Amino acid sequence: MIKSTFRLSALLPLGLTLLLTTAACTRTPDSANANGTDPMANTDPVDPAPMDPATETSFVLALAVEGLRVVDEQTGSTDALDFGTEMAVAEEAVTRIAGEPTESGENSECGSGPQTITQWSNGLAMHSADGEFIGWSTRPSTGVTLTTMNGVGVGSTRSDLETAYTIEVMESTLGTEFSTGNLFGILSSAEPDAVVEDLWAGTTCNFR
Image 1 (spheres, rainbow, N blue to C red):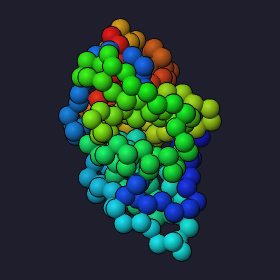
Image 2: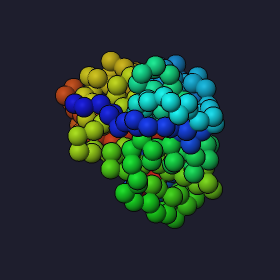
Image 3: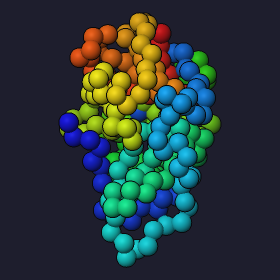
Protein backbone atom coordinates (compact mmCIF):
# COMPACT_ATOMS: atom_id res chain seq x y z
CA MET A 1 0.00 0.00 0.00
CA ILE A 2 1.28 3.43 -0.84
CA LYS A 3 1.96 5.49 2.22
CA SER A 4 1.31 9.20 2.45
CA THR A 5 3.02 10.64 -0.60
CA PHE A 6 1.64 14.15 -0.93
CA ARG A 7 4.65 16.30 -1.67
CA LEU A 8 5.43 19.98 -1.70
CA SER A 9 8.43 20.52 -3.94
CA ALA A 10 8.30 24.23 -3.31
CA LEU A 11 8.40 26.58 -0.37
CA LEU A 12 6.38 25.56 2.66
CA PRO A 13 6.06 28.27 5.30
CA LEU A 14 5.95 25.93 8.24
CA GLY A 15 4.18 28.59 10.22
CA LEU A 16 1.39 28.12 7.70
CA THR A 17 2.64 24.58 7.93
CA LEU A 18 -9.54 12.97 9.11
CA LEU A 19 -14.56 12.57 9.18
CA LEU A 20 -16.87 10.23 10.39
CA THR A 21 -19.97 12.11 9.25
CA THR A 22 -21.46 10.71 12.18
CA ALA A 23 -23.78 13.29 16.79
CA ALA A 24 -21.96 12.59 20.05
CA CYS A 25 -18.63 14.38 19.83
CA THR A 26 -15.89 13.03 22.02
CA ARG A 27 -13.31 15.33 23.48
CA THR A 28 -10.15 13.41 24.26
CA PRO A 29 -7.18 14.42 26.41
CA ASP A 30 -4.26 16.11 24.73
CA SER A 31 -1.76 13.27 25.13
CA ALA A 32 -1.78 9.49 24.81
CA ASN A 33 -1.03 6.89 27.46
CA ALA A 34 2.24 5.01 27.46
CA ASN A 35 0.97 2.19 25.26
CA GLY A 36 -0.64 4.54 22.74
CA THR A 37 1.96 7.25 22.70
CA ASP A 38 2.77 8.65 19.30
CA PRO A 39 6.56 8.77 18.79
CA MET A 40 6.36 12.44 17.80
CA ALA A 41 4.47 13.54 20.91
CA ASN A 42 7.21 15.97 21.95
CA THR A 43 7.66 17.57 18.57
CA ASP A 44 8.12 21.31 18.77
CA PRO A 45 5.27 23.54 17.55
CA VAL A 46 5.29 24.88 14.02
CA ASP A 47 8.03 27.42 13.45
CA PRO A 48 6.49 30.57 11.97
CA ALA A 49 9.64 31.40 10.02
CA PRO A 50 9.48 30.65 6.28
CA MET A 51 11.99 28.33 4.68
CA ASP A 52 15.03 29.46 2.74
CA PRO A 53 13.79 30.23 -0.82
CA ALA A 54 16.89 28.56 -2.26
CA THR A 55 15.97 25.22 -0.69
CA GLU A 56 13.93 22.62 -2.61
CA THR A 57 12.22 20.38 -0.07
CA SER A 58 9.59 17.65 -0.07
CA PHE A 59 7.06 17.33 2.75
CA VAL A 60 4.50 14.70 3.81
CA LEU A 61 1.72 14.68 6.37
CA ALA A 62 1.59 12.24 9.29
CA LEU A 63 -1.24 11.58 11.74
CA ALA A 64 -0.67 12.04 15.47
CA VAL A 65 -2.75 11.71 18.63
CA GLU A 66 -2.11 15.41 19.31
CA GLY A 67 -2.92 16.59 15.76
CA LEU A 68 -0.93 16.40 12.53
CA ARG A 69 2.76 16.41 11.71
CA VAL A 70 4.54 17.98 8.72
CA VAL A 71 7.58 15.82 7.93
CA ASP A 72 10.56 16.95 5.86
CA GLU A 73 11.44 13.86 3.80
CA GLN A 74 15.00 15.00 3.20
CA THR A 75 15.99 15.64 6.81
CA GLY A 76 13.36 13.71 8.75
CA SER A 77 12.61 16.79 10.85
CA THR A 78 8.99 17.37 11.87
CA ASP A 79 6.80 20.32 12.75
CA ALA A 80 3.60 20.08 14.78
CA LEU A 81 0.08 21.16 13.90
CA ASP A 82 -1.41 20.37 17.29
CA PHE A 83 -5.05 20.57 18.31
CA GLY A 84 -5.66 24.15 19.43
CA THR A 85 -3.73 25.59 16.49
CA GLU A 86 -5.53 28.37 14.65
CA MET A 87 -7.52 26.55 11.96
CA ALA A 88 -6.54 29.02 9.24
CA VAL A 89 -2.88 28.21 9.87
CA ALA A 90 -3.42 24.43 10.00
CA GLU A 91 -5.64 24.40 6.91
CA GLU A 92 -3.17 26.46 4.89
CA ALA A 93 -0.35 24.06 5.80
CA VAL A 94 -2.38 21.00 4.75
CA THR A 95 -3.55 22.70 1.55
CA ARG A 96 0.02 23.46 0.51
CA ILE A 97 0.80 19.73 0.72
CA ALA A 98 -2.47 18.03 -0.25
CA GLY A 99 -4.04 20.61 -2.54
CA GLU A 100 -7.29 22.49 -2.17
CA PRO A 101 -10.04 21.00 0.05
CA THR A 102 -12.81 19.18 -1.80
CA GLU A 103 -15.52 20.19 0.66
CA SER A 104 -16.06 22.26 3.79
CA GLY A 105 -19.23 22.77 5.82
CA GLU A 106 -20.71 23.11 9.30
CA ASN A 107 -22.30 20.29 11.28
CA SER A 108 -24.50 21.88 13.94
CA GLU A 109 -25.58 18.56 15.54
CA CYS A 110 -22.34 17.59 17.26
CA GLY A 111 -22.62 17.01 21.00
CA SER A 112 -19.81 19.43 21.83
CA GLY A 113 -21.34 22.14 19.64
CA PRO A 114 -21.14 23.12 15.98
CA GLN A 115 -18.06 22.01 14.05
CA THR A 116 -16.72 22.98 10.67
CA ILE A 117 -15.47 19.90 8.81
CA THR A 118 -13.04 20.37 5.92
CA GLN A 119 -12.19 17.42 3.67
CA TRP A 120 -9.41 16.63 1.21
CA SER A 121 -9.18 14.09 -1.61
CA ASN A 122 -6.59 12.08 0.35
CA GLY A 123 -9.29 11.05 2.85
CA LEU A 124 -8.34 13.56 5.52
CA ALA A 125 -10.96 15.62 7.32
CA MET A 126 -10.05 18.37 9.76
CA HIS A 127 -12.56 19.37 12.43
CA SER A 128 -12.59 22.89 13.82
CA ALA A 129 -14.63 24.98 16.27
CA ASP A 130 -14.32 28.62 17.29
CA GLY A 131 -11.49 29.03 14.77
CA GLU A 132 -9.35 26.25 16.27
CA PHE A 133 -8.23 22.87 14.90
CA ILE A 134 -9.83 20.35 17.30
CA GLY A 135 -9.69 16.92 15.59
CA TRP A 136 -9.01 14.88 12.48
CA SER A 137 -10.47 11.77 10.89
CA THR A 138 -9.59 9.70 7.84
CA ARG A 139 -11.45 7.45 5.44
CA PRO A 140 -10.37 5.40 2.40
CA SER A 141 -9.04 7.32 -0.58
CA THR A 142 -7.72 6.37 -4.00
CA GLY A 143 -4.08 5.38 -4.03
CA VAL A 144 -2.86 7.25 -0.95
CA THR A 145 -3.04 6.39 2.74
CA LEU A 146 -2.16 8.82 5.49
CA THR A 147 -0.52 7.07 8.44
CA THR A 148 0.83 7.71 11.89
CA MET A 149 4.58 7.81 12.39
CA ASN A 150 4.20 4.11 13.33
CA GLY A 151 2.82 3.37 9.87
CA VAL A 152 -0.82 2.78 10.86
CA GLY A 153 -3.61 4.14 8.68
CA VAL A 154 -6.84 3.22 6.93
CA GLY A 155 -6.21 -0.15 5.25
CA SER A 156 -3.69 -1.35 7.85
CA THR A 157 -4.39 -4.82 9.20
CA ARG A 158 -5.23 -5.59 12.80
CA SER A 159 -1.83 -7.29 12.97
CA ASP A 160 -0.15 -4.04 11.86
CA LEU A 161 -2.15 -2.16 14.47
CA GLU A 162 -1.28 -4.55 17.30
CA THR A 163 2.40 -4.53 16.34
CA ALA A 164 2.52 -0.74 16.65
CA TYR A 165 0.16 -0.23 19.60
CA THR A 166 -1.54 -1.97 22.51
CA ILE A 167 -5.23 -1.74 21.62
CA GLU A 168 -8.63 -2.30 23.21
CA VAL A 169 -11.37 -3.67 20.93
CA MET A 170 -15.11 -3.40 21.59
CA GLU A 171 -18.37 -3.73 19.71
CA SER A 172 -20.33 -0.48 19.47
CA THR A 173 -23.05 1.05 17.33
CA LEU A 174 -20.26 2.16 14.99
CA GLY A 175 -19.06 -1.42 14.51
CA THR A 176 -15.89 -3.08 15.78
CA GLU A 177 -14.27 -0.11 17.46
CA PHE A 178 -10.73 0.07 18.83
CA SER A 179 -8.76 2.55 20.89
CA THR A 180 -5.14 3.02 21.84
CA GLY A 181 -4.50 5.95 24.10
CA ASN A 182 -6.18 8.87 22.32
CA LEU A 183 -6.24 7.23 18.89
CA PHE A 184 -9.53 5.64 17.82
CA GLY A 185 -10.86 3.73 14.82
CA ILE A 186 -13.10 1.11 13.28
CA LEU A 187 -12.03 -2.39 12.17
CA SER A 188 -13.81 -4.31 9.41
CA SER A 189 -14.41 -7.14 11.93
CA ALA A 190 -13.01 -8.59 15.13
CA GLU A 191 -11.02 -11.20 13.22
CA PRO A 192 -7.20 -11.26 13.09
CA ASP A 193 -7.23 -10.36 9.37
CA ALA A 194 -9.51 -7.34 9.86
CA VAL A 195 -8.46 -3.99 8.40
CA VAL A 196 -8.75 -0.44 9.69
CA GLU A 197 -11.70 1.29 7.99
CA ASP A 198 -11.71 4.62 9.83
CA LEU A 199 -9.30 6.41 12.13
CA TRP A 200 -9.61 9.56 14.21
CA ALA A 201 -8.19 11.61 17.11
CA GLY A 202 -9.17 14.73 19.01
CA THR A 203 -12.75 16.01 18.96
CA THR A 204 -14.79 14.54 16.12
CA CYS A 205 -18.49 14.11 15.49
CA ASN A 206 -19.71 10.50 15.62
CA PHE A 207 -23.34 9.40 15.55
CA ARG A 208 -23.82 6.51 17.97
